[in-house]
Image (cartoon, rainbow, N blue to C red; front, side, top):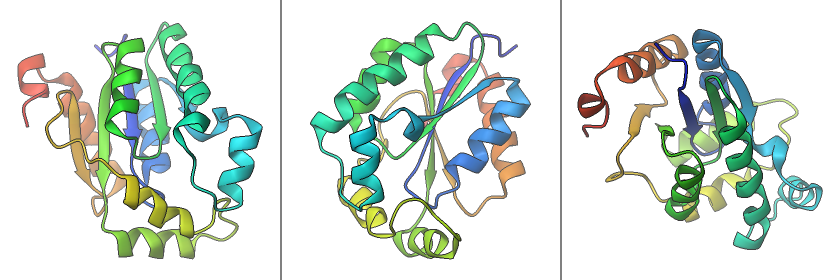
Length: 173
């Protein structure tokens, strides 16, 4: 039923996107692609130093992610930060059937979750920069919005139901 499913799970730091993506990949028997792992080394260094990435930093990364998703023959789940609309559109050009799950979280809750993580790789200041550049996918097709307050199992069930629905129902707001 999900043999060709490609799903992007996105949200700002602390939204629970990695947890959801891992659980969803298990449920779909899909390849999990951690988006941040595919940044160039200099971009990873910037993020660890708390420096927000610019478009020039993201261009090679988006190309890598699009190529990875397009090359996957079976289901794949990609996780990355809340991408700007033009970045999402670029990925959808590379993978036209890409479905996006956006995890919605309030800034204070996001900061609190990041601060509570022992040994979190990226500084809490990146949360602010992610919210500053956030373009919430409110009017885009193929996007499911989930509240961060839902349990991971409830989130997985919501995504699976959404993916199983007929296309016209799946993409309804």
